[in-house]
Length: 357
Image 1: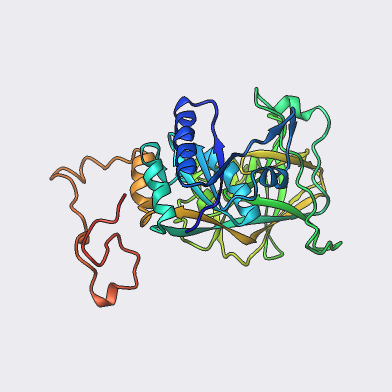
Image 2: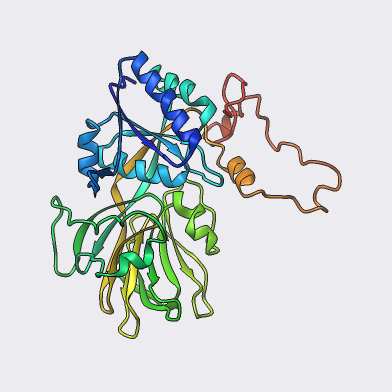
């Protein structure tokens, strides 16, 4: 693809990210590609997503250098502008980034020469009974040494506001939307609705709605299922609920999930991809939906999601299962599948070469 404008999101606290940024800038200079660092800060004030993109010249491609947190920030920007995103892996346990730091230049060459695939990911949208707000004084309590919080999401001007269906908020969540307690000694009490019908009322530390991409993040840590990022589902997971039913619920993408803060509950924080964006009071609610936009991520070959799962989660095999040695491959990775299996997503390619990068 033709790349004329590239936006760079760098984890400035990591020396290898800073060095990789030099490689990206040198590549851009060689091919006359405008390269702009996308910086959330300007003159001590936080920019909005739109302001960041305008300052970067509305990039065709956004490259992130860091872990999954850096990628999430870049994803928010890419989804806003429908730009492609390429994640360079400098994290430790992440699933989102695509290429190693050593391969950053060859990855950019592959994009320029159109040797790429585009991986689309589900995003979450949000409506609420009222605009989200962060009460005064709460920011200093939750910062934990980080910079100022992201501002509450504004109302989407392109959507209808309705008293019954709520206010559409300008939210782009790649991983999850979470409703969680603010005080350690008091859980939140929440009525959870699927497709408009009450599923159950929970008293819990948190309740979250995750995309397939986000199933390996907070939802996984809370005991939720691992979901292929190619699946078209959403996962509702309660965190430490005080009730017998503590299972995740997997919903279809067109089944909205509603979370209403009950009258006996304390205030509840709304976090979007790990960022606190507002606080709800008893009686307030949010509705979480599959968003109208999708993230378009650069992929240089077939995604070995389950191989990455095995590696990143340090999965080990039961001693009794491997008493006779390592389990061999179940299907060939060097020959094409027979005709009745040709429609399946198998880690083989027609020419018999390995697709794993």
